[in-house]
Figure (spheres, one colour):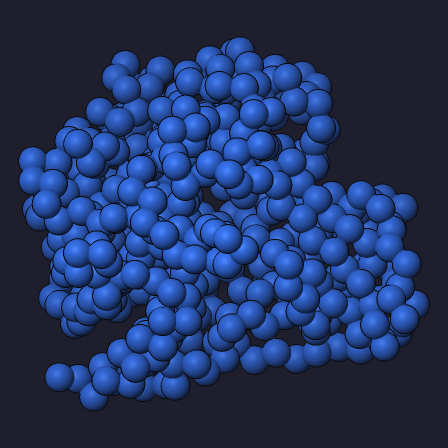
Length: 475
C-alpha cells in the first residue's frame, strides 16, 4: 500500500461522515494503470450493499464534456463550426434583441458566455419526474414547481427561453455565467446536425467506441442492473434534517445534454484517458489531438484560479501542472472528475448524496498523492485592505432567476456573505474580488460594475447574480 493512502482514507472518511454521505467510490489511474481504488459506505445503506468501481452513479454536469466532445466530432466531420451562430441551427430562438442574438455562437454556449443570465427552465424540463418524486412532496420545491411550465421537447425549451425578458448580462463572449439552458440547446443542435437523437449520437460515437458499457442515460438500458446506487437526499422531517433514500432518478428529456448521464468510476477513467498523453483508450481515437487541445482552452474566467474550456474547467497554475476537472450535482448525485493531462494522472469521485463536497475530496486526494497535507491550502491568499467606504459599494442583496441568492453585509469593518443560510467573512484579494473559506475549500467571488461604476452583479457558484437592492450596514 502506498504511504499516502492511510492518511487520505482517514481524511475522506471524516469528510464523508460529516457530509452524511451513504456511499462514495473513488478511483485514480496513472497512464492507464490503477493507482488507487477506494469505496466508502454502501450503494444501498438500508441493505448494506457494497460499492465497486463498476457501481453506476449519476454524474450530472460531468455530462457537459461529453456534449462538447460530440460537438467537436461534428466539427471534425465538417458538419458545423463552433463559431457558427446558434440561430443558424435554432432559428426559433428569439431571446433578446436580434443584433445580440445573432452574435451568439456554439462556442459561446460551450463556454457559458452567450450573455444570457441564469435561467429557471431546467426544473421545467425535469417537472414530470419531479412531480412523481415522493422526496419533493411537502417541500418548498413542490410549490415552486407549480409555477413552471412543462418543457418536454427542444421546441418547448426554445419557446420558454425566447419568452424570457430578463435582459442580457453582456455581449456574447464578454460575461461568464454557468448556463444549463444553453447546454440543453447544444443537444438540439447535435440532433439537428447529426440526424439522430442526442442520446443515440453520444452512445454510438463516444460510449461504444470507448467500451463504456455501463454508461447510460437511462439505468433501464443497462444489461445488468444489480450494481446501481440508490439515491439519497437531505429532507427536513418533523423539523429535523435527515438523509433519506430517494431512489427516483430525475430526468429532463429536453435537456439531457446538460447533465443526465449515469456512469461508473471505471468507465469515467477510460473516458478521461482521451484527454491525456500516453494513456490507452481501448484502441479508439474519438477526437483528434487538435480538438482535444481546443477542449482544454482557457476561454472564460471562472474565478481567480480556474477558466472554462469546452465542458471542462481548466487550472493552468495548479501546483502539479495543468489540471482539468468538472463536477456535477443533482438530487442524489455529487460527482467530480479530474486529469493532469501531462502526467497521465486521472481520477473520479462519485457519491450517492447531493451536497457532498466532492471537489474538496478531490483536492485532498491530489494533495495526498503529492505528499502534501490533505487539508493544505491550494493557493496562497494575499489580502488587500479596504476602507469601510470602499466596502459599502458591495453591500446588498443579489439574486438570479435560478433560485440562487446571496446577501453582502458589513459588521465592525468586515464584509460578510450570507448564502444557503450561513454567513462567512469575506477576504478582499483583488479589486472587486474576494474569497471565503467553506470547510477546506476557498470560494471565490467577483463583483461587476456598470459603466457608471456602480456594483451591479456578483458571481457565486459560477453564476452571475443581479443586485436587487441596497442593504444598510449592520452595526
